[in-house]
Image (cartoon, rainbow, N blue to C red):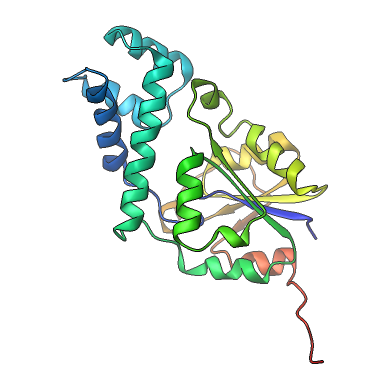
Length: 225
């Protein structure tokens, strides 16, 4: 049914990173650049979901270059998440093996760092499932390219040569990114999204990745010789 299926990473393939882990990484970024006691609200702002204007304003308050700060912040966040994976604190979901059965090319598009995406897929032995995997580069510009922007999703679709595609995610921004890219979407209702109310309309709502087989079709298997 689809040439390609592209999936978000955190909350879809692997467990989400606790906010406290990202907060600590953001705090460490401030400290490493000489800001010993940043306002906790500013730490929280840059831990998750910051936009370029807010980042620039916060950095100006502390006399820190936004470009350098964001590079360090992304490095510390990536290191913290990779460390959590190695310690068994961030693991794949049990249903990722369902992807082997899909009759479509596979890709990953995440708003997390490219370094994090690559390291986690490799660590968990998932990299071989996917023909392409996109995360953010460690730049301020990347903040404007995150979902719901279709920027990375469109790059993945181009690389996959897909005319029809399905994007699978667990956030409203994933559904909107698919809409903005002109493709179908599947909203994955993991336990942390069971009661989430959406202000947009995904093409499908699914309970786990096994549901994708009935949507996308099962890959043919070689019969007996």
